Length: 199
Image (cartoon, rainbow, N blue to C red; front, top):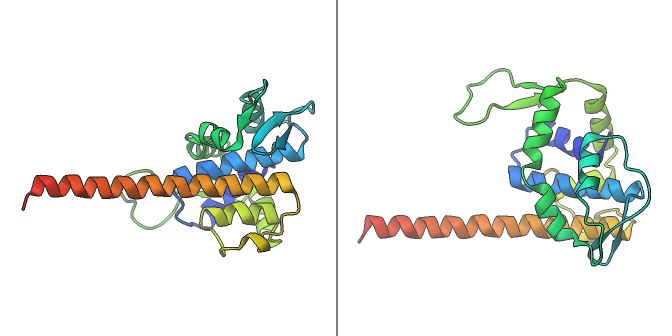
């Protein structure tokens, strides 16, 4: 089980409305934190430095490790989050559907757009739920960044690893940047519509 998979399951399980872009950035952060925990990478200030440890036996972790920049000056955490995070939420959803770990939601009318899904009762789902019930600090911190659960101040995160704290902060900054882009587009679209409407 990985933190990213647990985070994705929690987001689906709680039926919380999370933007795919926000969740994708958080999933990329979760992968990076697991790579740090496994000794595959280290963090030097805001750079990701590859280590010598073998990559955990997980498809997504393998892809994440394979995409690391292995030459100095190495990649900045923020740049990696944006690159690795592109469509990552959709990739996790597709993989879980393929493995039979997600099913279409029952009941209610489907709105236009993507079909709503929910996790199947599997050991992976129970593992994610246990971590969530135990308020595991990394999972709770990443979920909080995308608006799941209670907002926490920096002093309340419970994170005791400087590298992990740095990654969570970078995910938070990236999500805030994405929201700023959304707001700017909304304002620009509204202004454009007003030009067409005229006085």
